[in-house]
Length: 369
Image 1: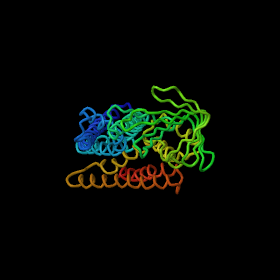
Image 2 (image 1 turned 180 degrees about the vertical axis):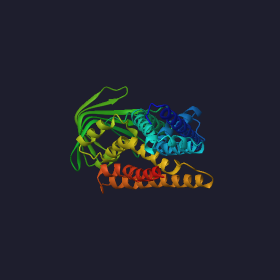
Image 3 (image 1 turned 45 degrees about the vertical axis):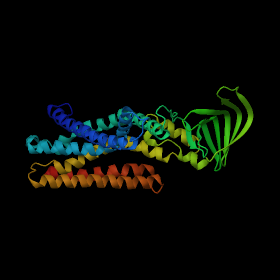
């Protein structure tokens, strides 16, 4: 059965319709709970508007949506295969001599293309929305609805000082030469007050971080209403150290699929580990194959010539339990990969390979029945 054949277009339309119905239904539920949580957090805050609360909830929903897409596809596949079995359309299709894999071939193609669209189009949108959500979270915690959180490009660190000041430290380039020393170029240290208003800015051509002291070189000090001060060297004490800088790197989920390769090269060139970013990037690359595996899993449980009565509910429960078990196992394997116990490529590909290798023989066995 070809992808552009009448039957191929028909089953693909059924799958896509089920997918988008389930997807937007789950998004609506997630958005409702996120809105309730946002309203709870801003209750009693006179400086927070209802429109701000809506933006806060909506900007968070895309990150959760990316996580549930595989399960949405599995549920959509179950609904599609159940409909085809209930209406005996699957029996008619099989009676024409079409094998199970011949029937599933156009569905595999559209599922793979759906996965490609997810990582190339939806993922950049989700990353941008997640960045917007971090800005709104910062405005909520800073109690200033108009506060600005600077871009995550390069190295940005936010530090709260005991006297109420907030420091924003940025470096365009950095490199770790030794375990306790970091060299940075294009450094700026911005001091903010409790209302997130700029008090003073230190700009340096380059700097070194040794212990908890930034040794700034070729420094300019900018204070509002005062002349610019220039210094050859200046020692700026903070509580930041090398480990703090490592922990301050941007979460991989907040970086677009298209920007991840450059980000990985930036971190590796700086001498830091980019293992988390590699894991996320490879997970995105293999996600279309994982979606195909989830569709195969739903076909194993729901694509039968006859499904009647309680057998349907039993298969639905088993398939849902299997799906969540697969997610739990994939998280365990990912943790092993992140901590270096197994290679990254194995941690990323093993769950998808397992689900495909298990589903293929089961589908072949049902094809012989």
